[in-house]
Structures are given as C-alpha cells and as structure tokens.
Length: 362
Ligand SMILES: *Cc1c(COP(=O)(O)O)cnc(C)c1O
Image (cartoon, rainbow, N blue to C red):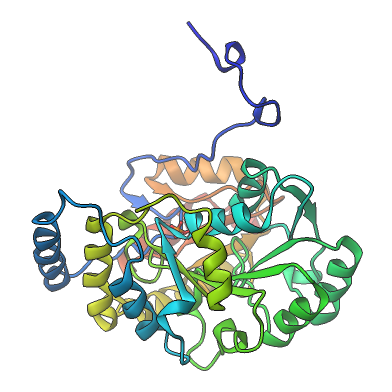
C-alpha cells in the first residue's frame, strides 16, 4: 500500500497532520461551536426556491463578482459599508486563506496569540508564511500595551486576532485593536466569527475600518447564523484590500448554489439570528452549572465556554462521550471547551458533568 512517505510531497508538509476535530455521531454534539438550532422551515422553503431558480442557469458560470451577495452582506453589516468593501468565500476559512495568499508567503510572517483558532498557523504553513507567537495577558486577555509590545517585538506581515477569541471566549477591546493597527505596518485581520454573540452594546471592529486600509474584519455565517453546512464566510475592508484578494481567488470560487443559499438566509437575518438570545441564556445557565461543580469558567462573549480546573481532561472528555455528549479537548492544560446548545442539550451536558465530577471537588 502506498503511504504519504512514498510520494514526492513538498518538504514543508512532511510530517504534518490534517485538521481533524472528530466528526462522531452522538446525541449531543457540542464540539465545534455550531449553532445547534436547525434553520427554520420558512427560511428553508425560501432558500429551496432560490436554489431552484439558480439551477435553471447552472449551465453557465456564476457571477464571479457575486454582486448581489456583496450588496446583501453590506446591507446586513451596516456601518455605512459599500459592496466594494465586501469579500466572501466558502467559509471564513477560505477568506482567511485568500488573505495569506495575498499578504503572506515565503519570507513573510504571521503573528498569532495562542491559545487561539488552530487554523491560523495552518493558513500560514500552506502559504509558506512563517509563524510567530505572541504572549497574552493573564486570563487570556490582550491589552493595547501587550499587543503593541508584541507587534513591535516581532514585526509581522500579518497579525490575526480573534475577537472574541476561540477557544477562550475572551473579548478584545477596540482600543487594543486600534493600538495593534498602529503598531504594525503589515495587515491586521480581526476575526469576528462570533461577532453576533457579543453584548448588543459592544462595538464591532467594523467601526474601526474608516481610515485604516490595512485592516480587515472577517465574519462567518457558520456560527450565529446557523449556516455552517452552506460554507459562507466574508470580510469587510478597504476596496483596495478586496482588490488584493481578487488576485489570488480561483475564478468563480462561489458557486451559483452557494450564492443563492446565502442570499436566501440573509433575506431572513432576524429569523436566522433568532436563537442568539436563547443561546446566551443557556450560556449563563452553563456558567452557573459549571461553577457550582467547582470549575473555573473563562468570561465568554461567544457561544462556547472554556472551563478549567479539570483534573484529567482526556478522561472527562471520554466520560462525556460515553454518555453521548461530545465536547472539545484542545490540549490546554486542565481545560475543556463546550459549545452552547439548546436547553435540552444544556441539561444533558450538565447532568453528565454532575455525574462525572467527584463529590469532593464540589
Ligand atoms: C469557526 C471559526 C471560523 C471558521 O468558520 P467558517 O466560516 O466555517 O470557515 C473562523 N474563525 C474562528 C475563530 C472560528 O471559531
């Protein structure tokens, strides 16, 4: 049998393993921060009609510039954004890959702040960009002073900051993001994958865009929007930044079907986001439940929680799985991450946690 070692693989890929959060079929799946509420029936029906219409023209290539979708995304985001400032691709994963293809590459560097989203170093590696790691403050925070100091120390070409951060849930203040922008002469990407879960009065990094042409703010329909399976991510930036991404995308990268589905979902944004408040309620229930069991919970502005004080994370992860509850072990010492699901899923998780937590620890 042929193995990878038998193939003339690119030298920098030798010995690497592929991204792989386990995709297991269990009753309660709380491991990859999906919105566990299904898309409402009325929205599915409209999306189906739009896909049927798109299929009538599917013998032709789709609109390469996804014009209608960029208009809809600009309208959804608000903040005075124009369609020329929007870019989209098959998940924010592909959007971020475009950023690395355009602004990274051999001889260039990424600055990332672990623990954070595990795909950032992956986009760097596959684009030939070297990875530099910055330090965080206590409790996973990132202050303006820390960001400026770490950027001045490392002088990166690309800085990516997840705000709020995954897997910790930690917010990053706007003044800190502005300080990061001022400290770098590279590009700054603020990944707001969880932007819709922030408190309603918390300003988005989108407010920082005017006058900052090296800043991009990325978003996704995969989390709050309950659309992970459709694969649609996007970013907002200066039109010149968007032009840079046009240089590296493959022609017609967004299929007519994807464009139709995303337009359908955006047309029902309030319904699609209707579960966000309910998820916040379940998040607070989960915080209280975990704290009552003696765990430390990091403050979260997202639809997941990182909890510490776990004596044996592997054993607890397996114990939960044996009870039909899948969460995530990110190899952060003493910690596990759980996504927030429905009320019933929260019950199941907290019941299993109660059964698995030694009474002495409570
Ligand atoms: C889930 C996630 C994404 C990726 O989302 P897709 O749009 O599904 O590719 C990006 N960034 C962070 C921080 C995430 O947690």
